Length: 147
Ligand code: AMP
Image (cartoon, rainbow, N blue to C red):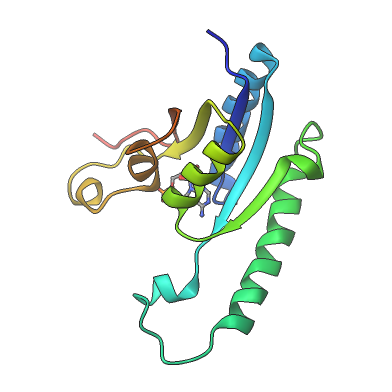
């Protein structure tokens, strides 16, 4: 079975490069199309959705900064052109599922910290994305768990 369109989800930290490298290996072997996606999380979400002020200017700045960061992050990968980069606004799980469906992706690749204990109960983006995903999800282990 081969994948046709692979969505790579990145939080734009350096930690996320192994996710892209792993995904690009699969892209090359499958001769697949690729989308590199970052989701900008609305500030109101960080404050629990209850902020008594207009955040639209801050949100625009946040979006502009994310665009620059995505450009510099993707600069490492000459095979990823402008048209393969995508920024969306919202909750990562919801937006990644929406984009995967919209673009007809058959694999989403995310990083996973291999959390356990309380951190696992609190959840992670990888866990979140897995639930209800419209296609396969590959969680690339980012760090070895401490024994
Ligand atoms: P986390 O468990 O939240 O630290 O995130 C683990 C992985 O989820 C990252 O390595 C990314 O693959 C993905 N991810 C986290 N936040 C975002 C985001 N805002 N946009 C896209 N992908 C994300």
